[in-house]
Amino acid sequence: MENNPVLEAIYNRRSTRSYMEKQVEREKLDQVLDAAIWAPSGSNSQTWLFTAIQNKEVLHKINDLVKEGFKEWIPDDDYPAKSRSKINSQKENYNFYYEAPSLIIASNKKSYTNAIADCVLGLENIFLAAESLGLGSCYINQLHWLSEDQGIRTYLEELGIPKDHMICGAAALGYTKKETKRLPRKEGRIKLIQ
Image (cartoon, rainbow, N blue to C red; front, side, top):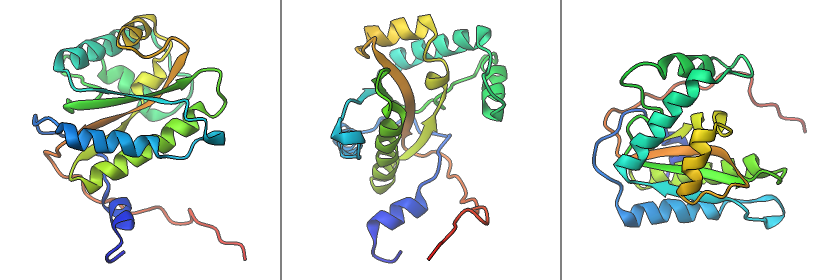
């Protein structure tokens, strides 16, 4: 790992859930977004869209729509974070993006088979670029889970996310307020056949 900036970013990256109010500077945001579009994509299709939002009012409006959307939403599997998010969303102080000053929404064509995979590769580049630039980040699922909610869809279309795009995921982005400790990796997650 010594003197290898890529591996250092990989090993040091954490999911940040506590952010300072300080906004991400435009130069750093541009670098993070540029890193996203240099990710691999199926057949080099590059059909993704990364929409960065730094406007606090817009972010709060999306949060209100997410809270409203969770009221009627029923989780489609037993992933614990889904049930937890639905319950937590009804608390007054709930904020799905942890009050990060920036949110990057990754979307892609609904008709494209590799839509989610391509966007997730771009998001991973965002997380690693953020780490290398001294920023915290966190993978955000809620907009993907609620991507067919009419209120959310309508508002995101007003923001310029195309109607024919699915929301594949998002990244909270900002300066870390509280460090996240490094958790050990689970055993038996690598297999080598030679």
